[in-house]
Length: 433
Ligand code: HEM
Ligand code: HEM
Image 1 (spheres, rainbow, N blue to C red):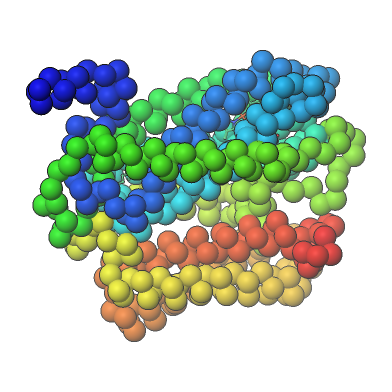
Image 2 (image 1 turned 30 degrees about the vertical axis):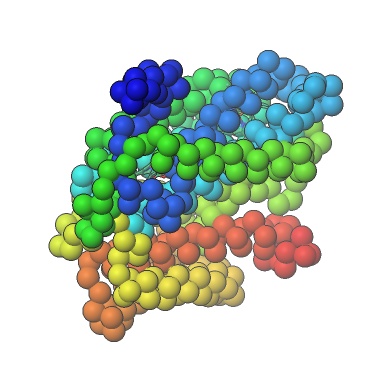
């Protein structure tokens, strides 16, 4: 009786499907919600929601400048559940970006990027890039004033990349300006190439996680017993999924996706801002020479992120949030320092006279590029020296603090760009915007 019912359970189609995603048994310690907060699974579910709602919208969306805006109005007003599908697509795109980013932070802060999970991290970073690109290419599709000018501003940043920048921009836009060619390119990338790549990398990501033996566990929990995936893990995944779906539905019912007036290429709003996730970069351009803001700083950051799993670290601490008590304390101090330092830097850069007026000519790459860059690097270096001396932290804790400073700094830059920049991108209180 026991054997038969067990056999029955294992041949059920739904059980077979689960076995495509999970092994038959998992370590009991990996079921702890506070280890992963279910963020990876939530990202996966949101991608599925995006594909599902996106495919529905695609039946009615018209990908050309004459029809795009009206088709969105028609989806909102004339189509049964059209507005709900549109709203859900809009809100889960934002949620997906946030949750994938938080998933990356949890992986980082539990040390799950280290051997044997280096490649999982690398492919994860590629997934995050694809999620940003999905958001960005989708942003243009409503073809309203907000989307048209946000894409114009962000793509013009490409012009600052030497040698290939202008050519890459023209290829992406399908011409000199954002127009019909751009909408067609963005639509095809958004509904074809990017989702395909996203799905392929996700499948690979899942396989890598299984190959590494499941989620990370700390040394003490290494010998935790194995338990059946069904129902132990599956029941938990079901609860997280249902809560997330309920939350998205609620957002979609209560809050409409914003839609401004139809795009007008002859009237630029002031200020014209990039989408919120690129506002940190746009803010950086106010303070640094474009070569530093768009080339030097991003290259250093991306090199660091991709190289992260390959830094030689002596301690084998994995699966423990923030490494140690010392790691927690230095992490907090670094976050506060990153916030305060970036605010001071922005205010200083606003208050000091424009270096161009003191040293006109071809020196701006030095005055507004190299000098502020060295100022920032030296300040971080000395701050880290103090932390290292005071807390005698090891290499992992050092890298963690540095990472936190950079995240805090980008958060402040984004916040200032989004909420504190008014006409002509001058500083202004948010309530006066
Ligand atoms: C669409 C984006 C992504 C999806 C759907 C996804 C999915 C998942 C899932 C389901 C897990 C296992 C459960 C969990 O940890 O919550 C996982 C683990 C992992 N992910 Fe992702 N992920 C994505 C993006 C990323 C990013 C941006 C990174 C890092 C840059 C990353 C790195 C990792 C690593 C290293 C693990 C193994 C963690 C461990 O062993 O504890 N993933 N991912
Ligand atoms: C990770 C996946 C995806 C993300 C993050 C994403 C994101 C977005 C965003 C932010 C918009 C603009 C919404 C607005 O401002 O109103 C949009 C629009 C759109 N997306 Fe997606 N999308 C994804 C996948 C897809 C897929 C797979 C399809 C179809 C195959 C699709 C079809 C559309 C269509 C037709 C629109 C225009 C209608 C509208 O604005 O709602 N999307 N997408």
